[in-house]
Length: 150
Image (cartoon, rainbow, N blue to C red; front, side, top):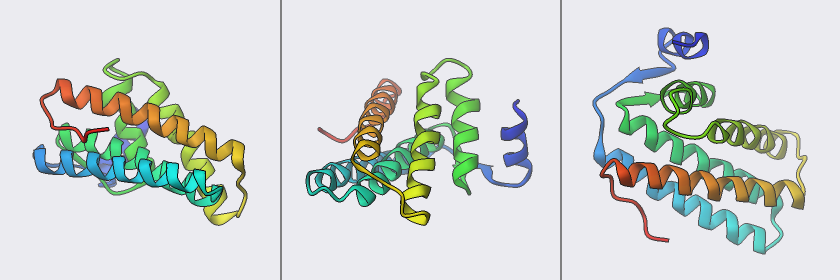
């Protein structure tokens, strides 16, 4: 068990809960809504909200993974640590899921708190969010969960 994940568990930043089909599907549907909303914001050249919504699409997609594994997160950092520990390190999902999520988190914080954002960052964050949504929904479909239609 990685130090980061162990630390999150000990601080209750990640908590074991029974797996919940309803929550998996609810979080994945929310990820799809946020992704669609990010794409609309991009079309309107609203780059700040594009980045924020694209990040939250990734966040909710990854949250659906945690629910499928019987965990719930209490912080963004612990979500990332749990995805790495439970899904990317064992090879169930590509490591790009974690690196893309980290990059998007940094972009979201810069846009939200530092008011630093632009078209290039918005496009990249949407591309990453689309990729994560496809990876996560494909994985969950193979596990027997319902996924939102495109």
